[in-house]
Image 1 (cartoon, rainbow, N blue to C red):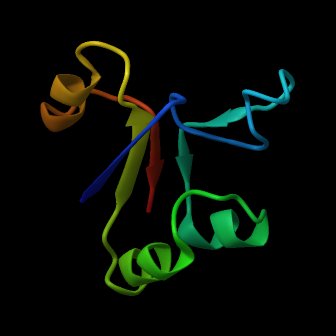
Image 2 (image 1 turned 90 degrees about the horizontal axis):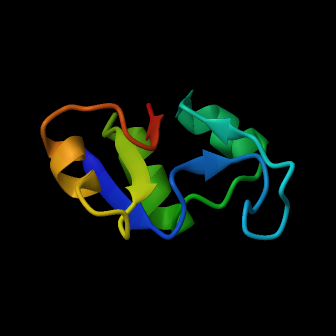
Length: 81
């Protein structure tokens, strides 16, 4: 599993810092990310994860305790699978 720490708490339909109406995805597929043109991470790294069935968790790295929650299996951020 790849842990992707960001400034926001997951993957949204649009940039939540610019669009207050953006909706968060709790779980999303690799294909849906590509079809919706969501900018999760570098496309080469994203494609490598997809081709190797390596899930990605995108979470807010600035919120205290989030990294511990992720590594202990608590639901935080968005899971891409």
